[in-house]
Every structure is written in structure tokens, then in C-alpha cells.
Image (cartoon, rainbow, N blue to C red):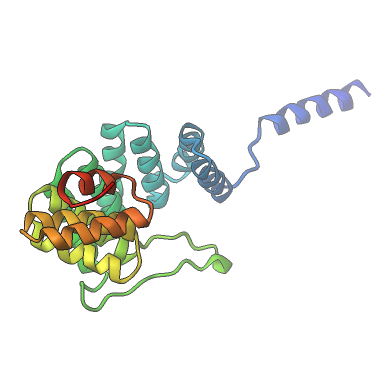
Length: 226
């Protein structure tokens, strides 16, 4: 009787120490925590995923994004770079590493990543969009062309390349993507290219779409009774 009881106690102890959650469950939990802004918690879950699967590209990219959100830029870059060594043509990695470069004011490097991502999607004139297929449990690995071109436009504008930035912002406006921000920055392009009236038109549209920052541009540069 004592032997049986001892075996039950030992077995119970072993079960308590076991982790029955799958790698995908940890990944999905991390995604939920990211949506809630719990980046530290998400990183802990992704650490477990990467301990089990060190070459899980999507886990590396997600952890890099979480680290960037926490201002851990060097650690974030390490994860992005590792993901890129595993798959140098990963559009998600290129886009998000480009965002990290831009956030740390390395705009030329950001442009290199954005341009490669756009090329991998087929180019500016004829491109493809991949869609996640949840029924097969596939993880999402593509980025919308509009998102890439909006960020590329911002980096181009920061570098003073207003003509090319203009085309990116116009593309986003035409496709109704981030058009409040796109109108704001296309206005900046118009202004720097010498088209003040058109700049003011775009800033007014940006303001109407809820971009508060547009008001400052309007007051400073445009005729207004406000």
C-alpha cells in the first residue's frame, strides 16, 4: 500500500513538472499578449518557442518586434538579423527590420529593406498579396504593398527625396491605406516641391480624416480664418 501511494506521489510530481502546451500554443499565446500590449509576456512565450525550435523564423520576427516596442533596439536587430540569415527573402522580416532602421534614423538601410521587400512581391506595377489560411494553421508571413510603400515614403521624405516619396504617398491614398498620414506627408512633399496650394489641400484632407498634426501645418503655412 505504501509503495502504491509513493508511486502516485512521484507520478504526481512528474506531471506537475511537465509542460503539455505545444509550441504553436505558446506562439498563439504570445500573439494574444502582443495584441494586449503585454510585450514582456509575449517575449517569455516566444523564448519557450525558440528554445524548442531555435530556427522558428516567425517567432524570431515576433520577438524582434516585441523587443523594438520595448526600446530594446540592439536585441531586436539581433533577432531580425538571425531571421534574415535563415531566409534572406522573408518579406515580413525585411519590412519590420526596415521599420527598426527607420525608427533609429538609419533611413538608407531602411530603404534597402523596403525596396527588396517590394521587389520580392513582384515590383510596384504588378505585385501579389499572400493571404493567411487559418484552416491550415499557416502563420502569416506577407506584408501589404501599401504598408511597405507608406513606410518607404516616410523614409524617402526624411532623406529629402520628395519626388519619389510623393509617388508612395499617392499610391497609399489611391488605395485608401493610411490616407490620413499619407495626405499629411504628401502635403509635405508638395510644399517642398513648391506647390503650396496643393500642400494645403492635402493638409486639410488629412485634418478632416482626424490627423491632428495637420493643423500645425495649416496654421503655419496656409491661409485660414481659424
